[in-house]
Length: 231
Image 1 (tube, one colour):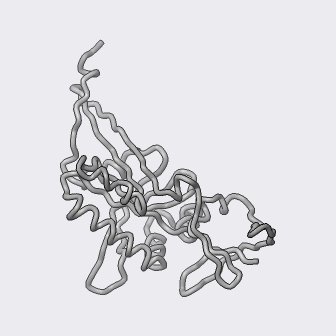
Image 2: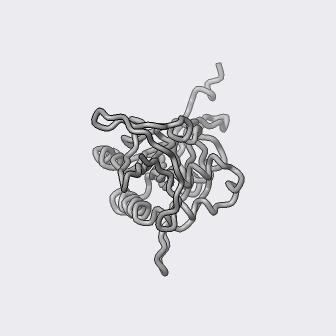
Image 3: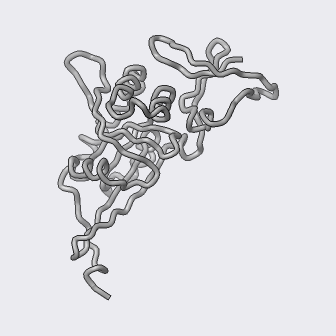
């Protein structure tokens, strides 16, 4: 057996651009597609904040805004504060954020992706090559609002590469659940695709032992299209 094929050495990414190019040009994570996407997440003049990639789950269950980082960047001073800022902007500017991603080139005729972005709140994901050991205790806190995807690269003496990936998802994705709320007899669901409301016909709900007939409708509220169900 050729020993060169048996010797795999770790190969770090020189910068986040190298990692980002790999993610958008090669299918590293089998559960999703990753696209370069850098629309501004902020609507305030003179201040723009960009994430790096758009992540679309293979079955259109969810979409995620992705931040790509390498472990050479300070986790406490750079990576974590940036994730907190991006998450805050997503929550504050949801209408603008969704609209920015809908205007990206390449998705004009893909109804499944457009409907996914139109009617589902985005998740946030960090894609990195490693979380430093001294910060592993922070992962549960990070995971409370952000998916964590890691990719490690190895190379053998024949210049062949392998990639080892790991996913740690937020609770809603792990449990296939979605926050929802009632407003004037209307049921709004943050992640309808995640709970299969886009593929299954939902015509009733049960609340405190009573069964209610519900109807699906799309309505423009505050300049933003909402998918909801009403009694």
